[in-house]
Length: 115
Image 1 (tube, one colour):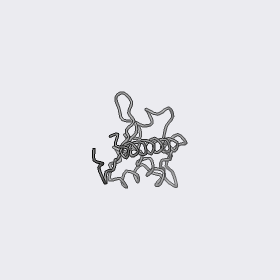
Image 2 (cartoon, helix red, strand yellow; image 1 turned 60 degrees about the vertical axis):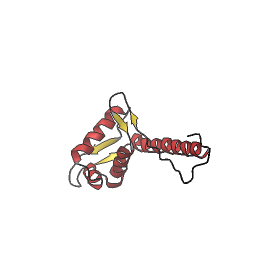
Image 3 (cartoon, one colour; image 1 turned 135 degrees about the vertical axis):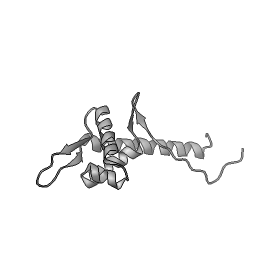
Image 4 (spheres, helix red, strand yellow; image 1 turned 90 degrees about the vertical axis):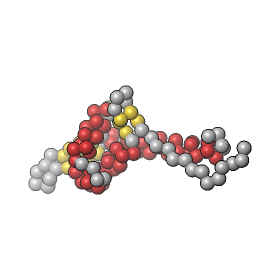
């Protein structure tokens, strides 16, 4: 068989429980934006997403996780906001580690023409 040239492969990762999505690239980006902006509203705005949708995604992730990934800070003089927990930070790291491993493995298989 003649080798294919200029092929690349893109791996997308979704982690689900039995009935609901838990993590995917969009949710990871939401977590990263919360880390960056300190606010669910600002993170959602950055992603052109409604606050309601962002909040629902966070609620789903928090409920499916062993421990919450995001916690809200109570408002007051300096205002409220949201922060990632240690579990949230670790979730981002693990997601990218899995995604990178899958990407590397898939690319190696493509080069070997197994696919």
